[in-house]
Length: 112
Length: 111
Image (cartoon, rainbow over all chains, first blue to last red; front, side, top):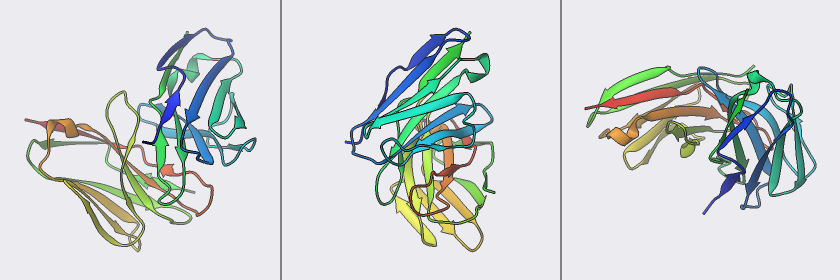
């Protein structure tokens, strides 16, 4: 069975802290994605990676960075958390045909 | 640019049929996906269309017209557990490109 896991379901951090969100998939997928989801705005793509050590900016990369040192793991980093980064963060991975994306359970991050 | 439109909210009665529409204007087309997302949970894959026509999967069906840039998701014999958001997504290009998601349609099923 396909599995994407995220390190935390709920996280509370203070403004200015460095935050790491981890995502692991066990399907040997090459493509991995980080989204944030906010009411009324839908899913917005932050970064994606199509191979180890490769990364591409999505629609809203400002304030975020990513790391992909191993194929199964894709990390999202908030260098200095701000209150406007309070959101639900969803990781996804994608394999071959039909190219659907499998999502992790999400991390609800609150920055105070 | 990429644009996907869906109604924001819909309400339907238990046991009825509901159709959720999706229109898209994207720079390319390599398939359309529907996802279901219950409140507080991750989206889960429902269906995939790449050719025109209807794909049926149990109580759920999805239709695609590429010439019209249009799709719909049809839910039959609605159940309370079908209350969720339904996301339409398009894969604009082949290769390693992300899906483009609509903002989702929140469906409420009432007794």
